[in-house]
Amino acid sequence: MTSSNPIDVRDMAIVHRSFRRAFTEAAQLVRAKPTPSPGRVTFLADHVDFGVLMLHTHHEGEDELLYPLLAQRAPERLADVDRIEAQHRTVTGAVDAASAACAAWRADPSPATAETLAARLDDVNDVLQPHLDDEEQVIVPLAADHLTQKEWDALGDHGVASVPRNKRPLAFGMLTEGLDDSDSAHMKAHLPAPIRLLYPVLIDRPWRKYADTLRNGS
Image 1: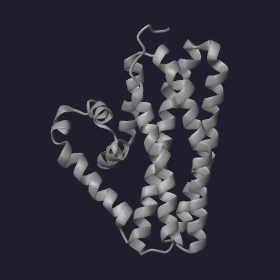
Image 2: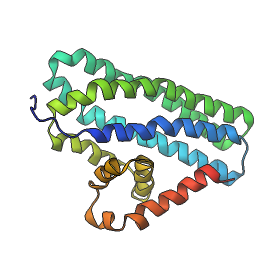
Image 3: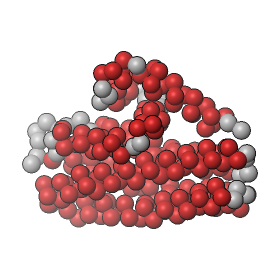
Image 4: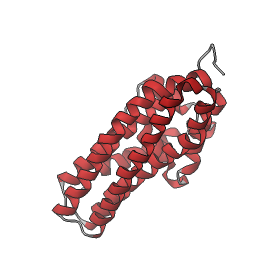
């Protein structure tokens, strides 16, 4: 199936944007103060684990809902689809190593365990950034031409359903931070009407508080 009217797929670049900065920022924060207070260790370790959960959820949705459809509908691009999907395994290996390093730092925060965690987060970026580039340059245009809007939107639905309910305001705040008015409105359009109405209270305020603690907490 090739559509003469490509679907709207801009949310993929928006989601990727949050991943492009999340692990870099986490590494910087860990290096800035490798042996903070126990509460700060817990907060930052939880933050790293949440970023890992978000990335795992994102890739799981693609593995289940995106790549199989593209393999079926764009067989002439199967080599590209298979190559880029296989990158998920490389990213998973790096992310799992970062998760293990995060657990070690959480249990025994020291300059050595902090640097190991930061280095593993750097490793995640080394393999994740080119993968995101490939998806945006190759996979997303294919999806725009070969998927329906309903099929594409199922990716976002999967991501929302996989995030714990109490973490969804933080996830949405993380995804939409710094967007221009157009992209922000596009993302908010996917929210239920009552949540859009109460957005400043339900999402914006909790995210701003969280982000301030993340970046300015002791």
